[in-house]
Image (cartoon, rainbow, N blue to C red; front, side):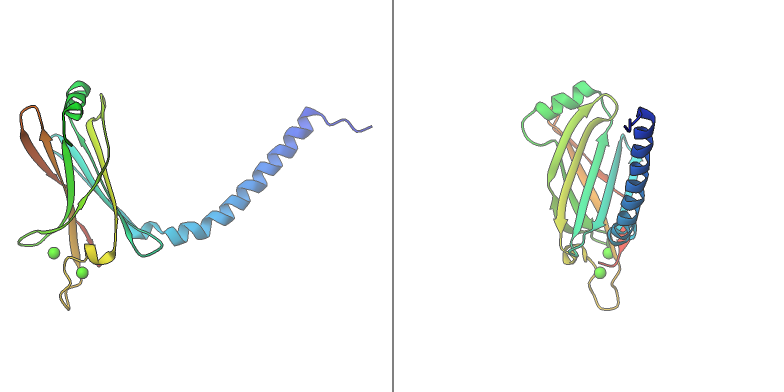
Length: 172
Ligand SMILES: [Ca+2]
Ligand SMILES: [Ca+2]
């Protein structure tokens, strides 16, 4: 009669987990290479009472996921009062940096929330085609300089502030 002790069962389980880890690593490597951190870039700026970030990730179907995030410093109570007021307190767009900045496209609001740690936080997301980011398309000048701009309106005072992300430089 063979009696399997808890110790030997534990050993088998550990071995299985180890084999699974090896398998997962082997499978994950080509995926990482394809998804490529080289095609993803995030730029953040802190100042004037906010942290604002722009990230652009190349997707497999040659489109780009554009994400803008912002934290505006204030109390959770103020942030909640602003969120509860009618209308969206924040809006975002992507511009091309030039003598006169190109207005490329707006980025829809996907989340807004209040917290004690970060004040008023918002996220904006859109998937675009490369030509939408190709703000310098003259022959011989393929480099593009794009940045995000968030406009914040306090509905209680009807005052607004704008925050620009740093530029991302890429040839779209
Ligand atoms: Ca430019
Ligand atoms: Ca270009």
